[in-house]
Amino acid sequence: MKLGIVGLPNVGKSTLFNSLTKAGADAANYPFCTIDPNIGIVTVPDKRLKKLSDLYDSKKIVPAVIEFVDIAGLVKGASKGEGLGNKFLGNIREVDAIVHVVRCFEDTNVVHVDGAINALRDIEVINLELIFSDLEMLERRISKTHKSIKGDKSLVKEYELLCKIKEHLEKEQSALSYPFENPDDEALIASLNLLTFKPVIYAANVSEDDLADDGASNAHVSAVRTYAKENNSELFIVCASIESEIAQLEEDEKMMFLEELGVQESGLDKLIKASYELLGLISYLTAGVQETRAWTITKGTKAPGAAGKIHTDFERGFIRAEIVAYDDLVSSGSYSATKEKGLVRLEGKEYIVKDGDVILFRFNV
Image (cartoon, rainbow, N blue to C red; front, side, top):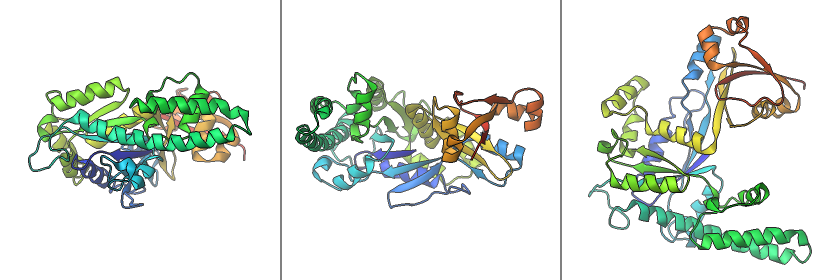
């Protein structure tokens, strides 16, 4: 899973990015990795892995990972090349979802690019740049498709759909909000990698004082919360400066620090939860002596498709899956004990994998 972090300058975007990626530094198998100056990999916290590893005496734990892309230089005029707009708008086309950081804190020491805090105005500035960039791409695609119609009449329907999407964007509406009439039309637009077709998670960056009540008393947060709900987007509250401090702490210290702040989970945990919810993702687990690992799939994935996450041969040669629920396995104390209780199930090709399923796949090579 790849998430692109966007936002105006001085909203806390880079602070959040840096703290999130530092948070992955202690993972043995997937440490924070700088692929590029603005890309980092973070492990997905999953307490189930440690318990499974202890049960199987696994040599290593391999958690699921999220790749973060810090989309720097996004300012008014980015779609026309202002700042570093063109480069980073290109990067964001490849992400699964957008994390839009919105400044909801007052601080006279941190200058706002437009002079004053206004969360909804800031959101509009970024959204318009994404729309302008999409319009430019659509115009090129429409022109190319129109020229090709003479030799291929089957492209008429595509041309008409592209024109409708363009009209929708010109009304300052995202491609994601377009009322598609059938799945094929939606799939076509999805294939274009339009920026405004990406699902959005809004990160309301608040001061430390607003963390305890989850931003309930912050007017800027209330405005963003309403906006996110109206646009079918997720919202989470974060204090980027606090996340920077948390990223430096050991796990025990981290929990104590969060407790002192009156919050139950860090911004990273909130973001991952919001990401999984928005993208419809779950994790199934595999465990053995060699490793215990989490695999990320979309809700509704059938057993062969889940097996294909491990290797395409597993999907092609799928025979069946031996499945036990994580809670049943842990409470029983061992796989053999779970099997004796009749809690291990044999499932076929139509089985829909559930979050927390511990699976052993059987397949032909």
